[in-house]
Length: 325
Image 1: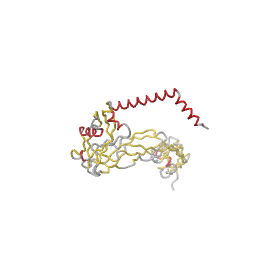
Image 2: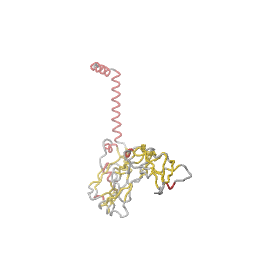
Image 3: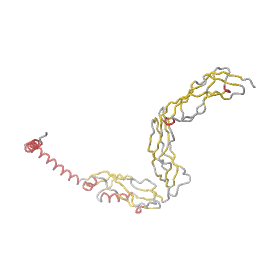
Image 4: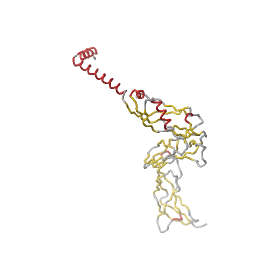
């Protein structure tokens, strides 16, 4: 077991030794020097950059801001250290801007540079100089006209990896968005589209956050959507099918060798158990009597079937003529 009493006695002995007293004295001078430096720095001129959080308050529910309201202002200030000490620790306090105090003209909320500078001096204190700010003014249009629901189209260019396929339509978490315009939505606006979504080499169902393409002077809610791209692996499926003959004239028969073919194709995993009818056939009208083999054809296959192969791709045949009754 650890003998704590013995450790404490050793520590006391070290402190009371000459080296221990020298170390304590050194640490005391360091602390005193730090205190002097701290107080001197408080009286010196300093320049600092701050991100000031902004909120426009008392906005009526019937009003929708059409422009982007900045969440913060990037401000560079100069002042004495003691003037800025309250901004050194913790979160920056919120600067609240009253809506109706800054409506300068119809459907426009605006804070020109002089007025915004004045608000920032109040925020930091009158002795602090505002060196720069971004943005340096605010001008945001708004509307009282209700928004209109508009169809959302997905602008995408998607390519899967080999042996994988899109297993369904590409969809967003919403099929329409609400569009706000100053004087109502123009009749020419019938749809909105997303920013281009370009991906390649996908091997699994994926979801992407995509921005909706903005329109000048209008606001779209939501302005970002989640797009789902369904991807599945392709697996091999095979089946034996009987070979039929089409286009036979009266009194004529045709026998093929072999009479059965094997059809193989790639199908998305979720469709593997679906039994779509597949047929192979020889078209009598395309037979060339100078050749001993006839081409084997397949009935149309669904688009989700890929790399369709029939084996054999041609067959030998015998033409029979039947006596008419």
